[in-house]
Image (cartoon, rainbow, N blue to C red):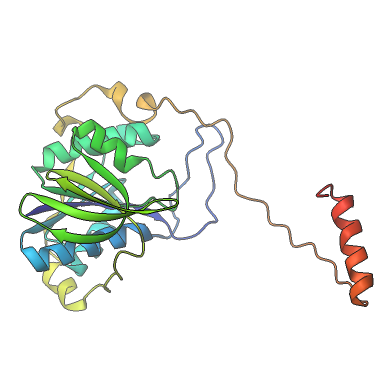
Length: 262
């Protein structure tokens, strides 16, 4: 089975500056890590490979330093890695990002199963996976919390819906976005780090894609324009009240009334 896992390098801290003109995060010089939700997708792929055989490829989009998360995936058991890196991809919203990665997937090969984490910690939209599947014209299922059965031509999965758990049988090729409780991710292996330190990472840019129209990528291909983005303000104000239960209940009511909560 050919399995592809989409991974992303995200800031390792919430203290990231924002470009006021473009609304894009300034990632230069910021400590980074693999998106935590992608670890669950990668673990799912590795478990399926161990059970049924096949190959696990990871793909990421970002600047050259994003190779670090691909190397980390190698240390966990991934077989191949692809990085989509081009200055023309910068500043992409979810739509342009989805299109870019879908073009990268077409260049990378033919896959039976594509796995994504639920969302990324720097965007939190949870839209890229399903949008990629639409571009690739393959079936997709979100909120997957359990792989029930891996069959020859399809997968049986369990979805965590708002009020119910639903089971679906989806045929290959397909795309799944998985929840964080699907499996416990394994730790990177030092042995695999040594074994894979010289393993190739394929790098593709716009010139490698089937669609080379620059208006489909980066800021040019992003219909979503951010009016304003800013880090949340930190409010450490506090009051300490002393008194009996009756006195404190009256104080609390008056405070809530003052703040117009009641």
